[in-house]
Length: 292
Image (cartoon, rainbow, N blue to C red; front, side):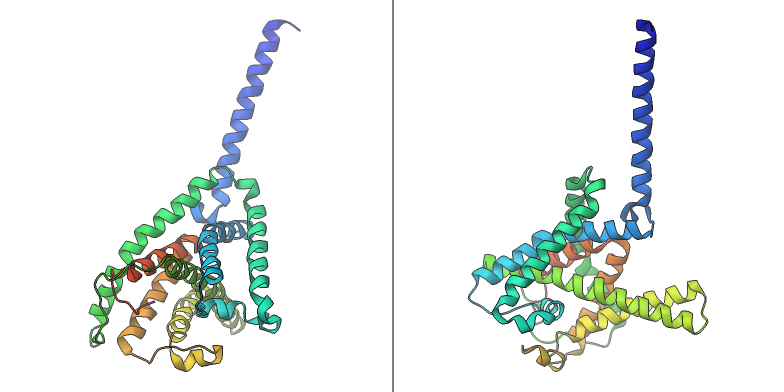
């Protein structure tokens, strides 16, 4: 074989490899529901895995706050998520951390074959969460104003106060991630599936069943989110809550619906960082102190 033939073969192989890589990248983006809108099982699994990876710093901050703080306060959502560990007593904290670490390893395995640009994608999730956090408060204020008839309670709005400690800030950030995992990922999905199955059982078409399922998940998860801040619903967890105030309950209900819609549209990572950064802004005195 001549040198000319060798050069031609090498050039052909390089062009083929480049075409194959481009085709693979196109297939990868099409399968990813966070970017291409696909709802295939592998795509959904990767979306959830990416969301959990994005939540990992928030969850780690929460665990650090519990480990280093003398306070015994815990997130209601975290207590609900890991209530099955109560029989372990003091070892429940260790077991919870092992479970969180195990889930992290599973999620890393899920995205291992699609890890190109993973760091940039995770940074985009955080950045997008920051943008939505800035938009969330004006949206809620507008919605409550349009609904009308409810006045905010005294002390609802506060200005900038004393900067919170690092442990308190870490707790607030991590609690938001737990709330997204419990109220939005688990409860929204569960309510959606139950409503969809029931509608299909009674003869509804696929489109109608899906719409009812989405409505049940959206409103139901938001209502439970708002309710689990009230004393009447938190006593079984062995912790205090708040008295019912119509305006605050409506605010949380609308916030829960907004975050649920954001999770359904942009994924759990964006919803968690939106919630976390919004809560941090409230903690710093940027808005109502008792909302979340």
